[in-house]
Image 1 (cartoon, helix red, strand yellow):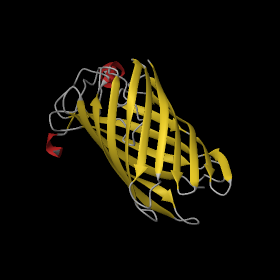
Image 2 (image 1 turned 90 degrees about the horizontal axis):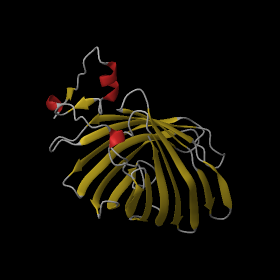
Image 3 (image 1 turned 60 degrees about the horizontal axis):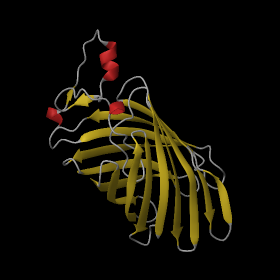
Length: 264
């Protein structure tokens, strides 16, 4: 595989061509299509994020709400704003997110989670059995409320990959590792893996089913979830999702909805 993975070289005198390259590398050569010209691909509502960037000069804002329940505890994630913006070149996207949250068990706690910062690099477009791929380098910064902050910066990486099987079906996955806050001042590596299968139901409506797992903490977590997306326009998408934990370490259930808007 790595022998087939080569730099997609642009003429040294063509700075505009370099900026317009869709991906950092290529399995087979330039595709001639930029992400900003594609149908909008969002990082929600599934756990697996899109393996493309938004495109040079394109801004995409994604919002959502999630209710989750585990035993006697309930949580509300409000807003879930993710800002994605293409800078410098078509293959590079900067990312920022922060989410208000409310958690209720014996008492209700409200506040915001730590600030999320990231950069997504579009690595390669799909070529036959070789996947479309992207890499996200990411971190959280300890800006959250006392009840929800990790009190330290935590970094990680997320490798994304996917295959279009035909005009309706696609398969995608992600493999990521992030530093997570342990007891007191300790930290540990938390791994996550996902696999999602998506099917276009019409030109505007899509569906997906997904498994994802989170590993490395006190207890592993396994989930199944599924959802629907509705593209109201080329630059406006609505979504709903429903998920269930598969083991005792996971939350019992979660349900959410959201909207994504693209500016280009």
